Image (spheres, rainbow, N blue to C red):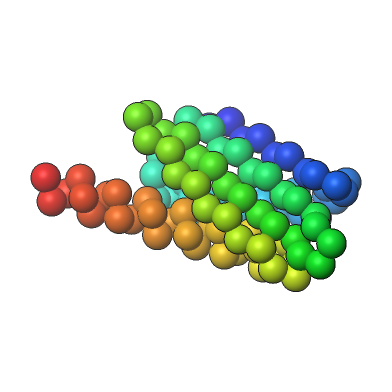
Length: 95
């Protein structure tokens, strides 16, 4: 899987990169056929926004969350993506 991290309006720290890598590995437990994972972090005036775009074969998943810290935003978008992957998996099992 290819991981692209984009930092807008700030410089990405080494610690934040490690947190992101850790969380992305958590996503891989739910689906092994992820082609690319694009993570966009944006620092706004009062909030810090995280966005994850997962590309699977024939399917894209997107999650966005904004909060006071990047760590909280990243945790929320990872949870949203995992929820979407679980729903897709349940749909496939029912068919």
